[in-house]
Length: 86
Length: 300
Image (cartoon, rainbow over all chains, first blue to last red; front, side, top):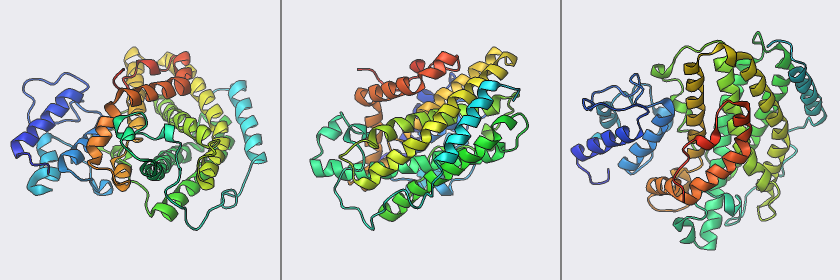
């Protein structure tokens, strides 16, 4: 990862979602808020989020290995791709 | 699909053209065992970095090397687009309501498969890989599934196909005539453009026909949903042209940051607007959606 702490990475992810959301994101939005059923992000924006996660990691993901659900919320995104130097 | 002389006649005319132009995909491209590099494989003006500071910082050989990996990316995104297209066409071959175009869908499917052979051969033979698709991998995400109104799925499918192919064809048309490109790259683009011409005619007619048929039965909310989806698809399609994998393979540093910065540069946004406007203005004329209103990046 690019030298950021976990808190900084999570904040960066939340900021990214707030910036790119298709609907207004409420103040209550946190790392456990669902991203997709709420329509904060569309399927097409998830592809953009994927690129941003790769940028945070500093390397590409194995796209073919991704499974449904990994972009459920910020917490899952962090745990799947960015925790423990992933 | 109800009786439509225009649609049926168009499909019949395109079938006749496809039969006249029928070809063996293994014979129409001259494949060298290896390609010499650096050389031009993508027209420099169509390379994603063109007219940005990153482009200015590259030497001539570095630009030519990047042109190879941009070609691999262009052919890879074509492969992924055509895979989705073939899946959709196969599902619709005998779909009630589309009987008038069934014969042409067979040609469409056949020709797309041939194109995939060309693109895949280039990527595997000369690059040893096809770049993965970052867009379509999530199409099966259950959370994104929703019910469509009658006709909505077909309109979205054929409109997405038209958007994808119209943009690609702008590149194919230019690069098929570009004498700077190595012969195999020029041939692939030229052959693809020659066959895509039929597909573009079909795409415009079938979108017009399906839109006129189904739009009156949709609520304003549904129409807005269609427009939002297609606008998002247009942006997503363009994003694939800025691939950090290609930048990395070309030896460029910090490829993800470079992809983001290049996407955000006003020169590339202007390029996207120009190409989109020329290729897709007809969708606005039909009332499907206004390409000019889509946010494709910062203005100068």
